[in-house]
Length: 109
Length: 113
Image 1 (cartoon, each protein chain N blue to C red):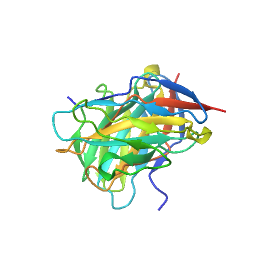
Image 2 (cartoon, rainbow over the protein chains, first blue to last red):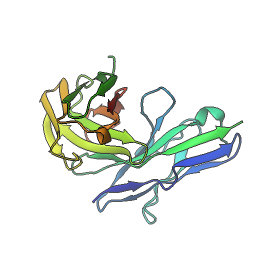
Image 3 (tube, chains in turn green, purple):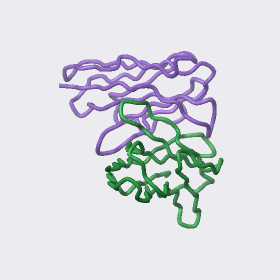
């Protein structure tokens, strides 16, 4: 069965510090991986996807098939990055979209 | 387009009552997802429709839960009878197809007392 695991419920860092939100997945097929973000009082929205290989708001994520990971990174955290972050996977055959448990990022001034 | 619209935004009901949550996906989107969000489990996929047909309902917790999509512009999630452990935020999301960005509604916060 497909699964997405985010081992940290809460990650607290100081402004300017590097950030890494961990995500591991299990899926026997070829996955499409995403990061979604939910800011306070806003809708859950897409942050980035592995297939586009882009950097959004300074965040990047690299798919490591050997380690089955898709960690989200940012070299210098900003206070406005404080939010809930979800890693997600879609299955190539059915398009089923499943999420991890989420990690709350708290950036302190 | 106003995006994915869910109603009601908040629902408080007594244990044993029937609850119906509603969702209007973005026009032209043919995939629709229902999720339940809790602190303990994060976002759990309950059911997924493609072209109004349920593709995967393996996440529906019990027979008390049912979902329908009678047409491309409307879906419901029903809980009958409701229980206190059903209290959560329920999200609906839609996308234009497989492996594309999903757009989320504002969610319905359900409290069963």
